[in-house]
Image 1: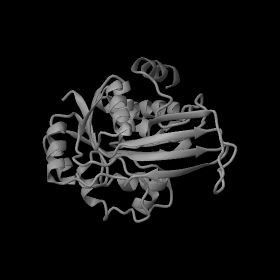
Image 2: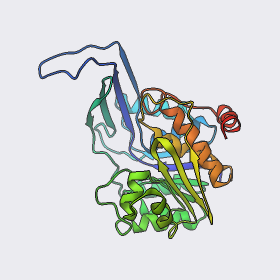
Image 3: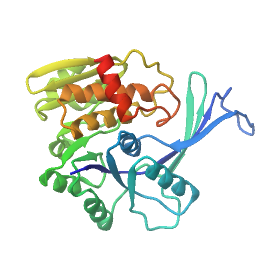
Image 4: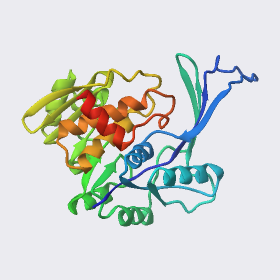
Amino acid sequence: MAFIAGAGATNVDLLYEDMPKIPDIGEEVYTDKFSCQLGGGLPATLINIGRLGIEAKIATQLGSDMFSLFAAEQYKKNNVEPKNLYRGNSIPLNITSAVILKDDRSFITYGKGSIEPDDEAKETFYNMAKGAKICLMQPGGFTDVYKKLKSEGTIMVLDMGWDDDMSVEKYAELLDTADIYTPNRKEALRITGASNEKDAAFALKKYFDKVIVKVDKDGCIGIDGDNYFFVKSVEKFKNKDSTGAGDAFLAGLCYGLFYDYELKDCIQFGNITGGKAVTAVGALSAYVTEKELLRLKEEIY
């Protein structure tokens, strides 16, 4: 069990930085700051895991187009092995153009957001992920695979995006399958119906022995057995762009889980990787190596 796996759509971000304004219809606006990189979500988490020296594998959809070739190159460059689930002829990725102003931003995205797997794709993902120490989970069509992996001893880590209809009942299968769930404050309040994040954490204790609630820029709540604690965020990291912060936090958390650290240590790792990610524009621009992560943990915590 020497790797971490997951399945999800690949996102490519075209970032136009320091834009003076969003152009009106028929208008063209120039900037001299542009970058192309993989976007946020599960792929970003796995890339950050790969950058920490852990072998990572992703089941995703890649075509023969220039964006897919770029994505495949980035995966391999960052110690992530991609397994292709796509058999069509179009562009199967999500491609986002982000117009970034000083205090705001605007997006336009091509794609359908997530993968809708058939039986062959599920089998391909299972065969790739079998034997993983950790598997990252998200809502979608892979729940049966997650259950099978859990039954075989893989640690299942669930991270979900915002959903207006979030509830324990709606996501019962995923919550029952997960060993670790990583909601932020807003998600924890919605899914539990609690009025504050501490009550939400204790509500989640009914389902998980180890509880995590990310409290945005302040830090993170943890409950490990009967031990409740709060881990403050890293003050030395100055926020320039919060894109990808949650994905990077999850990578640091999984680093700790992979090496069997206590939950509090895992959250400290997550706060460092998540905090570093916000110091530059883009989901994957700023990151720490394993050596830097261990050094910063000793210095900060």
